[in-house]
Image (tube, rainbow, N blue to C red; front, side):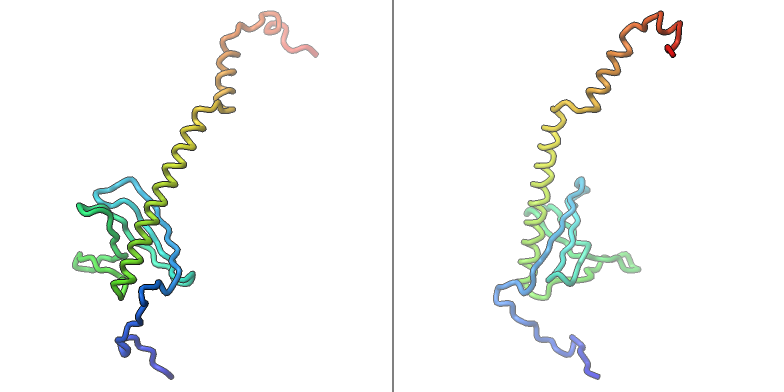
Length: 149
């Protein structure tokens, strides 16, 4: 049985500036809570998903917090992190770009919704016509005799 213990091999493969895997970034913007702007997840190479990234704003701009969990002493610990500075930079850039794209999508949806609200809707037309029908006087003869057979 072979031992594939990663601690036994401290060598980190070099990326030579190229991202070794495709990153699929999904960002979920939220109403800002303090400095928190969005949650995100990343799928690496189509085979490994990491959820729980947080995109935040600070004095120097946007930054990414790694997924973390709270220990029994109340301290927060990252549960995963990039091993190389190059991959950290590329991951952060992908997440920040994903946040920008998500905000652009929200703005486009808002503009489209705003334009649709200005157009008359079927529901609005029905409500308007219902108001007109209620304001018309009821014919007395039809009301007294009832429906014809």
